[in-house]
Image (tube, rainbow, N blue to C red; front, side, top):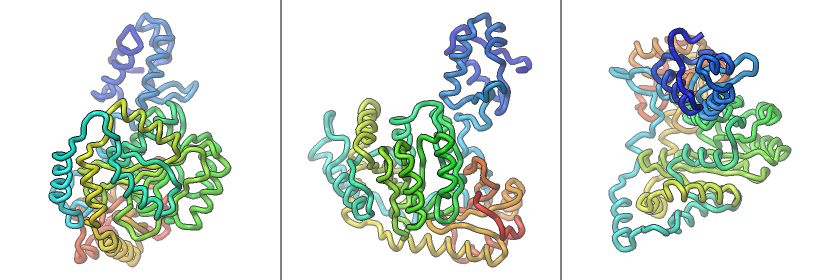
Amino acid sequence: MLGEYPIVGRRAAEIAASVERAIGTGELPPGQLLPPLRELAGRLGVNPNTVAAAYRVLRERGVIETAGRRGSRVRSRPSSTPREWIGVDATGARDLTSGNPDPALLPPLGAPLAAAAARAAERPTLYGAPDVVPEMAELARAALDADGVPAGPVAVTSGSLDAIERVLAAHLRPGDAVAVEDPGWGSLLDLIPALGLRALPVGVDDDGPLPERVEQALAQGARALVVTDRAQNPTGAVVSAARARELRTVLAAHPAVLLIEDDHGHGIVDVPLRPLAGGTDHWALVRSTAKAYGPDLRLAVLTGDPGTLNRVRGRQRLGPGWVSHLLQDAVAWLWRTDAVDAAAVAASYDTRRAALVRALRERGIAAYGRSGMNVWVPVPDETGAVARLLAAGWAVAPGARFRVASSPGVRLTVSPLAADEIAPVADAVAAATGATVSGRLD
């Protein structure tokens, strides 16, 4: 079954480490069936319970999956293989793959960092200081209140993914299922198995997650639901007012479900937030500074019900302790001084994105992108489309980065595009894919 590769070890930790080493070297490829417990136990001369414990550790780490009598096998995309590796070499091509903001729209950081350094010189942050700078909490909470987000305490984390991981870990255990948007954020789709959790895909359209798909996932036992409120990656979907009402109705019937809302589009979109929180016992909403102020700030604010925030902040104190007050002070300075013209930034992305969607549709190509900086194009042959576009001088992101069970597609980030590049890239997509007027997100 495993050829010449010998899984070795006498203890569960040794056996699990042996399997992980083989996966890392490629000797155990994705999808490889592992020996039954008793067979491997006999080969190693150990108790079957020892092998069972090793397999349990590997499942909890998201390395393998078990399907009852069909046995255990290496995950088709193990947690040690991030989706960012699914890509193309953009050398020599116009790179539309990154999902990065336009550097020209990011604020200079010299003044806010200097102000933060001056404050630190006067009042150094020492052990025992609060984990959230008071001004940061005050400004964040005021903005959340203005957007109709329910009252709740505020925490600060090292970006959106850090916040989501901490909230999931505060409530869920290995083996639990999480309902996720499909297509959706690739990093989140990596995080789920890395935590030993199971992803249940939920289809989306321009208005966000489909209520019937959410209901189906919750009926299948999903203990958490993650929703992107606007600027959904990769489709640009926005939760509309009508869709928000439908989703709140679904969630009201499942009050024990953990709701996590990702509002990474705050500061770069001009569509209103329609928060879903309030109908479940536990919820959280996270806002990252990455898109509006730069990914290197590594900062997000998180709010939610008191129980969830207490768990997150308590566990954070046992790890990193806090996010640097220098960064918090710098972001608070940016907010306080309105260093970014959010309306102008949103208009810049909206102009480019809308122009590309319009140009593609004029050429018979289905395209999606209601908000944010990405456009999603369903294609019949993902690999072929990516290769043909690369040959034409355009590097686009393969949809496999963002999909669980949804149909193939490619993602184009508009932030690098100039106005005179819209038509050429639309022509290239049309030539590479053919008309897919009926293309669907799911």
